[in-house]
Structure formats: structure tokens, C-alpha cells
Length: 74
Image 1 (cartoon, rainbow, N blue to C red):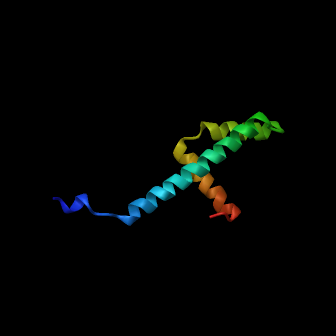
Image 2: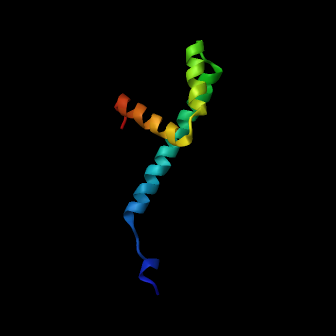
Image 3: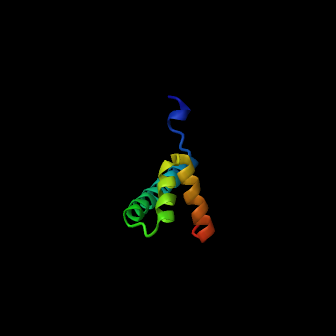
């Protein structure tokens, strides 16, 4: 029996929880973006939302985390 087979790393679960939480927030944010794209009030808002859609997933995640930090959420 390999000792590594039964080793439990609590940080791995914490990291996975963080990833799951972030993915959940990203999904919620994506749904908000979709809604705002359909109901954009002005041309600037529409262009900003379209720009967001062109961003890579990693950049979207960084944008969400930065926005939450500025808003005092995390």
C-alpha cells in the first residue's frame, strides 16, 4: 500500500472550494452581463459589455475579483 493513496490534503479541498465559489460568482456575473446586453441603456454600456465578452476567461475572472475588491465584497 502506498502512503500517498490515503493522504488527505485539506488545502486541496479549500482550493477546490475557492474555485467552485469563484466559478459560481462568474456564472452569476455572466448572467448579469447577458441581461444587461439585452437591456443596454446607452451605446457606451453596450460597447463595454461587448468588450467584456471578448475577454479571455482568465481576464474575466481577474476583472470580477478586482470589481469585488473595489466594492468591498472580498
